[in-house]
Image 1 (tube, rainbow, N blue to C red):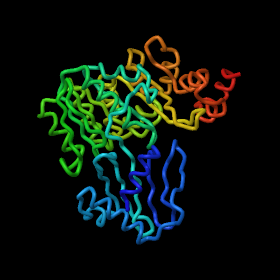
Image 2: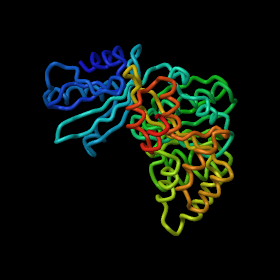
Image 3: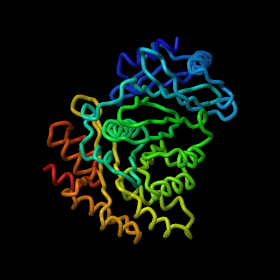
Length: 350
């Protein structure tokens, strides 16, 4: 029965499937939560559907039964891959299922700008793709890794939880490791991969102080490390990284981060005029001014640097949103509702 829902979601181009007792089976279509089933499902029905997902993945339910949460991928040949988060809710089984197509995404079709793809040409350092959950960070990462694979002769190691996109070697040799099934944790995998002759390391998420520290050390020793954070904006991202460290270590961390950081790309998804989703980006490149700002704990000045550095391929989120509006891709109302500085944007839009 779950197979029917998975196939239907792919046919309708849904991005997510929601399963919870007392609710309709629900899809997210073009960013809109849309109930699908005619009847609300019972706790038993929800449990059966989610148990079928575990069976499809050939995965034991021990972790879920112990902790109430589990993440794992499901592959349905000829249909798609799916990223499942199963969780307990009011003592019933629930799940959110992300649809991941077999084909790697085309960055031009997804309207990802060349300034974002330029990070694929970095040789070392730390590149961060940030944004709220569901903003398309994983898809952007996949496009960047695909571009590296097409243009560089490198060893790429991806550390993911779970693996979403599957890469075939083109110019690069790609090793894909999944946390929990292939390795114990991001931290253990990151330590181990430094002995596996990598050139590029994709770290699915920098979750804690130890992982962030290890990622910066890897970047410092000549590797290109690409990772994500659930932050919006370069200034917020830098503050988040620094704040994970004890006060006594923060100044040293600022110095280290200023040396290894190359770019911070923040993205959100907003509705376009066709009621689909279009990404909007803030792009920060680390130049001499940004380096000094990070070291001197003046991250509040970063937004001004970005606004005044378009000649260095930087762009602020508001400037990008205005660009989408002037191109006729979004409405004025959408632009204003997603603006960082509403009053300033109102004046610019007229």
